[in-house]
Image (cartoon, rainbow, N blue to C red; front, top):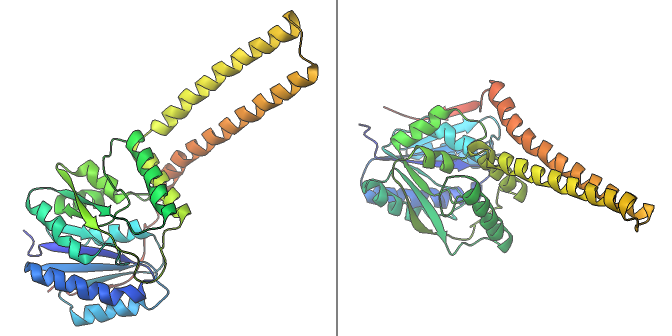
Length: 314
């Protein structure tokens, strides 16, 4: 069994203003726990002073601080995956670097792990984000709830804890467009949840634009279910039946019970044509999402490239 009890994984992208208070608070919490721990920072191509600050942390506590330095920006989930491939702890906690999820909440997750849960998700209490993000998250949670068999209260909260076995299964999956909380739910035998505090961002700006949130949800849906394709097939079939019925009505009005002008019939046909073309475009886009995932998998390119790895494992 590993000598390390807890590994804390923190992806970092341009968070120079938050890193020092984050590290100070995290060390205070984990040292108070009393069990051996480590923290793995993944510098995801930051262009500010984040990399230098992380090197300072490693120099100050080389036995506990490990730094994975990417040569570019590969995204939050890939930064976490790189750390998952190197963790040593029995329980692995993921934590954002923006201090919106306070490090003081980590013991809540460790308590559930000690009780036998192997994947613990946090759900944010009194979420301190703008209304647009809150409502967007509600929509995304709703879509995921009714298109997959993954059940979680707050899929956007990255304050989570996983057992070593679950993390090893995630790392072995080798997926490129991945959604870690959903993968963990699939591999866990006893998932659990706990309410955690949520704070306003201390400094800097959110790295998740609305486009990235939508993109992340596409990865979730297309990676874990075929329901969108099935729904579209049913919808297309219903459109075809409706179109056949409308054609029958137009033929009836044209040849059996004339009463509509030719212009009206032409405009009606154009409206039907444009609607069906739009349906086809949606279907092509949906199929393209699934084909794109296959394309990414067969490329065999490295998922990320390291520039530097700072660690002292002796």
